[in-house]
Image 1 (cartoon, rainbow, N blue to C red):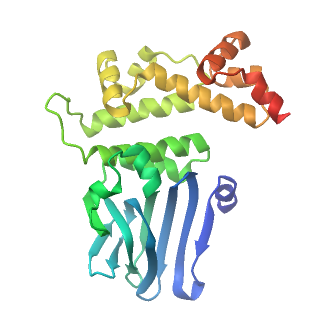
Image 2 (cartoon, rainbow, N blue to C red):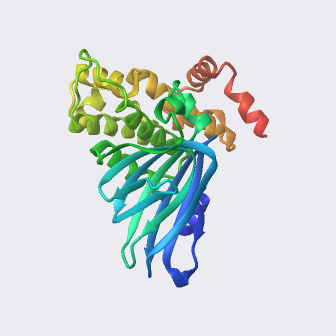
Image 3 (cartoon, rainbow, N blue to C red):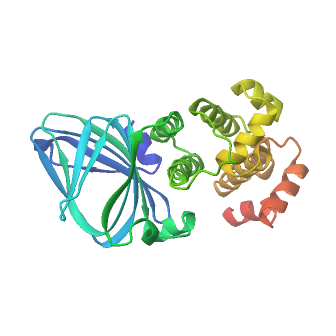
Length: 295
């Protein structure tokens, strides 16, 4: 299992075993975006220093089990607990993460630095944290959609799937900071979970001829609700989302030495000419140029 994680891009930091079983696995998702899975079982009460004097950003923490605290040097107390998702922002602050003796605390965290946050939150970090320090923006029971993403991220090996899962978590949390428009329909956790399942089917079965009717039947949504929900959840249409997933997967396959026809077949194109045309329209260059560059 550990070898599989290393092959998937995870690196491990582990404390001295005399302190107990305390480890943190992390992987770089994008420039300025880090995914961390920590699992601490200290023998004695543990206070781990954390310094961000020259940095700022946003952290999404999904509590998988147990609880921990974060105490800033200014006396701010932040609590994290299993079954809850917490969103915090920080700038130029330091403190310590505190863990209770003999208690397990497992968490999945998404760390987004200030520059990366500006890509997804144009108002910037200052709009969320005007005066520096640390601030808790949200703390609530983990939604079904977030729990689904967390489980998938813990076992995901495909870089594209990890990237999509992390950005989906970030989008859900940032959307909660926006005022709800009275004209935006409210979607239940069950509906969101069905949309997430349709998304997962696109990733898992993109080699097949996927139709919207098929996706609707698999997840239990009407065609109207699938399209409307997709616009709400992903700000796009299902067809364009599927095309983007297929093209990104095809590009990865080509970059890893796959032949053009094979890459097309594995992403749902039975005729190489149709695949080449779609790839060229999407990226602006032919798939054979990617294969040639790798060769």
